Image 1 (cartoon, rainbow, N blue to C red):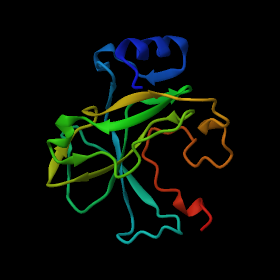
Image 2 (image 1 turned 135 degrees about the vertical axis):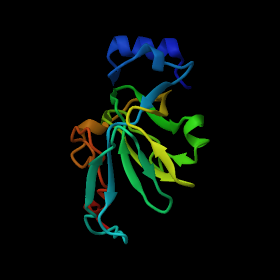
Image 3 (image 1 turned 30 degrees about the vertical axis):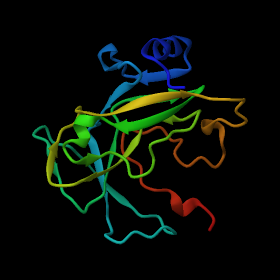
Length: 178
C-alpha cells in the first residue's frame, strides 16, 4: 500500500521518514515533492565501462539555469536529504517534468529500507531544455513493507551509496564481482 499524506506526516513525526528540508507545501495526497539540487555531473569519458571506475566532473547550475542536451547522461541530485527506516521509497518524475521531456531516472527509482541520503538522478532529455536549481523535479512515494527486514540498507557492509553527499554520485558498478 502507498502511504497517504496523513500517514507520511505520522511517519515523519515517528522518525521513520526523514525529509530535510521539509516543506509542508511539498506534501501531496500520497507523495512528497523533491527538488533539483544545485549540482550536476557528467562522465569524463564518452564510452563507459561497467568494470572500471568511470569518473565524473561536477558543476554547479548557474542562477540563469543550464541547458541539458540530448544524448548526454547528466547526474543530478535532490535538494532533499531523506531517510526511510520502515518503508520502501520510490522516486518518480513529476508529470510537469516529464512533459518537458526530462527523465529523472533511467532505472533507479526504488530505494531500499534504510536508505539515508540525497537521491542521485540519472537525467536525460528528449530535446534541449533549460533547468534550474530548486525546481520541482520528482516525487517520493512510500510503500509499506510486508514482513521483517533482516538488514537495513544503511547497515549493509557492501552498500555502495551510504556516504552522505550533496553532489551526484557516479555508478559504483565496478565494485561488484562479475
